[in-house]
Amino acid sequence: MKKLAPILIAFFFFSCSSKEEITQQQYSVEGMALYKTHCENCHQADGAGLRDLYPSIQQTKLSPEALACLFKNGKKGNGFMPANAKLQALDIAELVTYMREKWGGKKQIYPVDSVKMALQNCR
Amino acid sequence: MLLKNTVLSLLFAVVAFSCSQEKKLPFLGPKTVNATGDTVYHQIPDFQFLNQDSVLVSQKDIEGKVYVADFFFTTCPTICPKMKTQMLRIYERYKERDEVRIISHSIDPDFDNTSVLHDYATRLQVKAPKWNLLTGDKAAIYKLGQKSYMVSAQEDPNEAGGFVHSGAFILVDKNRHVRGIYDGTVETEVNHLLEDMEVLLKE
Image (cartoon, rainbow over the protein chains, first blue to last red):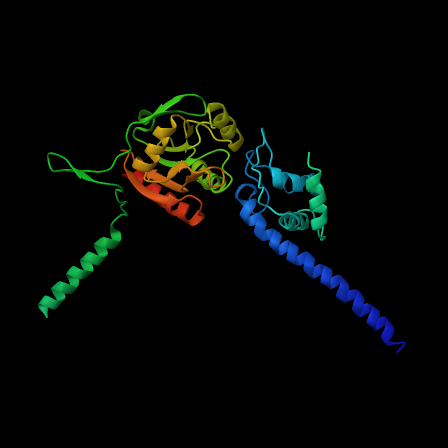
């Protein structure tokens, strides 16, 4: 029984982290599909943008909160970006999760709750 | 036996000739027959619009040129960026060849005035007269699109961005006849356009 304990602990540990990993992957895959639909036309599949017309998003310095607001509300004036009011908090969470994994090298879910909070505080 | 041989060699000749024949492009659009019995092909009528440099552009500026036309608007969130990516291929390929031109008609002239178009062209890094971005009377633009270039272009509040328009690239020969229509959002379609462009340039 004593020998079994660490195995059990290890088992739980792995199953927990892999569950999180699976959710992260789900977010990322959904996010990729959303990116294709809503972002890729302008910012291109590799995120490099198109000349000076559409900016590259590979090195974006925007925080996840700022991204959430940008997706939902767009940007007016110079550097116009259309708003996408139809995006739900989950969509945005998935998009940000995908984008920061692909271009930020960060494999971590951006939670739906954080999106909701960010959207309440958009400037 | 002799007959068979004759037929065979005839057939052979036909095949050989059809192979060596150069590719020809059709004349698209409604045809009419004039008083002397000649076929008159559909032709792009005279037009007059302002470009991104606020210069008046008309059919005279494309006289004797092969050109590609499309319809877009600068705030279009859907297919326009894909079209522009593909149009840039055409632009870059024929940058040094004066007999090739590109005309992009804005279908949102209320917003896309000459200064908006100028900014757009600057950021896309393209220049007139090689690539003219045109704006002007809305009704005239829609009529030109629907009647002459045979593509859809109109306002539609239900559409993302507020307009419905096709992603077509229209290839027009030196005499303003439409010779090909391609999906400007698809790379392989634009490859065909580039091939057909060479055919028209040799005409």
